[in-house]
Image 1 (cartoon, helix red, strand yellow):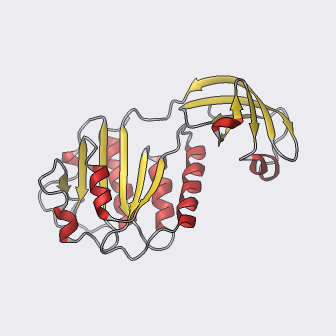
Image 2 (cartoon, helix red, strand yellow):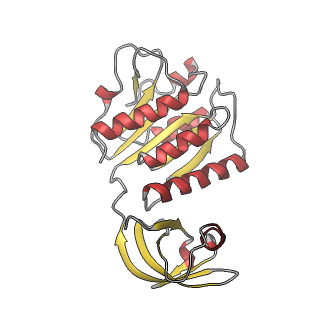
Image 3 (cartoon, rainbow, N blue to C red):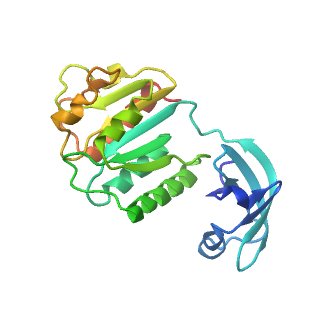
Length: 239
C-alpha cells in the first residue's frame, strides 16, 4: 500500500468497514487538504493496514469506507529494544526518529548517573508524536513503545528479559558489538548517555547473560552510537 498517506488512529475510530477519524481530522482536512475520494491507509496498532477512501469531511471528523485490510509487511518478527541515555537538546528526537525507521519495537530513554538531562511529560509526549510521524513516513503498521525510565535499575530489569543483551561500554576492549549479535527472538541494546556509565551501573549486569561490547576504537557521540548499533544489527541479523 505504498503511495498512500498513512495515519495512526484510535481503535474506536474504526468499526467494521467504516472509520470516523477525529484524532487526525485537522491534519487530514486542513494541513494536507485532502478531499472526498482520496485514498489513505489507516492503522490502529493491530498490525493491519486498512486502505480506505474518504467519503465525507465535516467540522468534527473525516469519514471513510475501508476498501481492503491486509497485514502490514514492514514489521519485523523480532523484538528489538533500544535503551539510550537522555541527551541534551534535540538529539533525543533524532534517535527516536531513526530507531523507528530502523525497526525498533521498544524505545526506552533512561536517566543514569552521568546524564545531564531528564524527560518531562511534555517532552515524552513530543517524542511519541515524533515516533508516530516516523512510522507514517516509513510505512510501519505498529508504533513502537516510547517510555522514560528515571532510574538505571529499571533499565537492567527490562533489558535482561531479552534473549540477547548487548551493553555498549566504552571500556570494553575485546568483544566487538558485531561479533556478539545473534539471530534470536528478542534483543536489547543499551547505549550510554553523553557522560558514559558509572561503575555501579556496569555492575548491575555482571553475572547475567548480558555482554559488554565495544563499538570500536573511537569514542562515538551518544546519538551516533545508537544509529550505528541499529544499522549493524539490521545488516547482520535484521529482517
